[in-house]
Length: 157
Image (cartoon, rainbow, N blue to C red):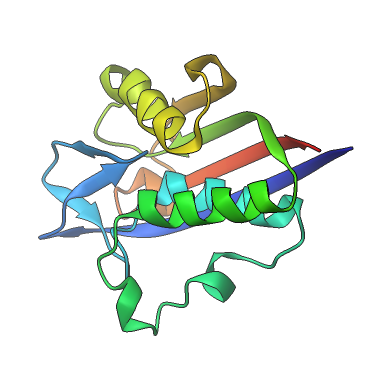
């Protein structure tokens, strides 16, 4: 049996926070605002995984009003979701994702992010695709106010 899940997340860019994407700290003057470490890519992947097995969304499993998730490393949340998916008898076939961010350029960090995610999810790096795009200076992303991530996963039972 196959299950497909789609995930989306958006976080504001703010001063005074680290920029964490795909579990990797990216040197930049701004980071993402959020209750956890605000890793927009991992959050989109979590939503895709949760959606594929109809468990709701990231806010249902890890509410932003629960202090135990304050500033938590999103890799920990991803591992918890992966364990739930595994307990239901599913394996991740592949993940395809896109980060939409005007700055900084992410080309040099893509493979580090893929390796980070592969380690958490017990996958081969070739099962994880991450693409980086800009929004051509249009909208909240283009003005440097936010980052967006989208993800699609294919699960196999």
